[in-house]
Image (cartoon, rainbow, N blue to C red; front, side, top):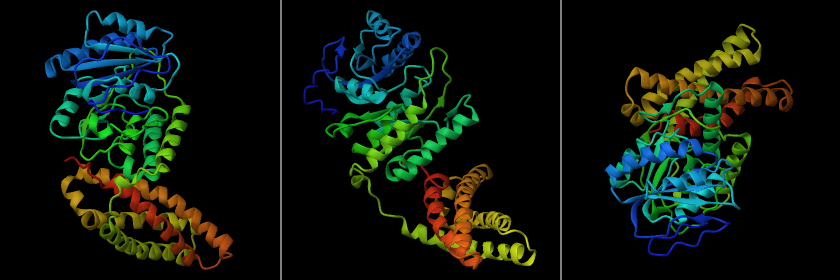
Length: 404
């Protein structure tokens, strides 16, 4: 699947798709709305979008509904809206399914110099679109609606859903750090991108996270993020399933192995890593001292002693990293509230590393060294976890979205 430059005529629709409108002159914005059983939501969404865009881009935009032949006839409901909203186009797909591919199909027939996407379920506040367009007009190649910057958040998510969302982001950082790490909310499905930034490369999305494909295969230099609060669905049923999480991981792996990350390659932050390592050495001293006190002097069990020693070392390391290793970031995030957030993130990352640390320590101590040389086994565990802690803290605890 490929997006062509505006100078090249758009390809004919495929896979049994029918487009309700002919292609006319170029426009400032083409906003794609992928739908499946959203008949109750499409009318209110189109009304709110046109009210906003008629003021921001009068007669210079189009809305493209791409429907996967919904049983509730969403496509037909959208067609009926065209009498009231002439800037609305409807593409009905009968032989193809999937949110990401629906977005690309909409972009293929689009006439806009900028291409956007918004969910049809009203969980993406339409009003945020104005901020995204402002960012594009100020020179951004990509403007992303984010739940994880100032002004962003989620309304009534359960703890399990929050953990799943953050867990998926962490997996993305591990597999595709130079793609996923470029934005605070790589799971976002609400963004606007310059057409020229993604025109040309073959796009091969999997699942429903189209932003990964744009970041991984597009030529994206400047990124802006606009905070928004993710709303709860009022009508219809959620389409999030375990299958989509599997597709997400599949998509990450395909991008990781696709050989397209070279243009996103950046120099490894060696100076910062050396500082992190030196701070880590001070943590080793603290860790070893507490471990010796608890295990050898007081006779407490090794694992229990290790957990306490590691937590004291974590506190030591945070203080030094915040004041030295990542001082430039800390200066941009001053105040006790921001410092507390950094500490909690740092602690969570390191505690996750602690689980790995304890496992490695026990394996090396019991199986490799035959219950001898506990301190050497501890050093081996610390060395392995150091890389884990540095990379995730660089991307999560001390990071500022690069907005140019």
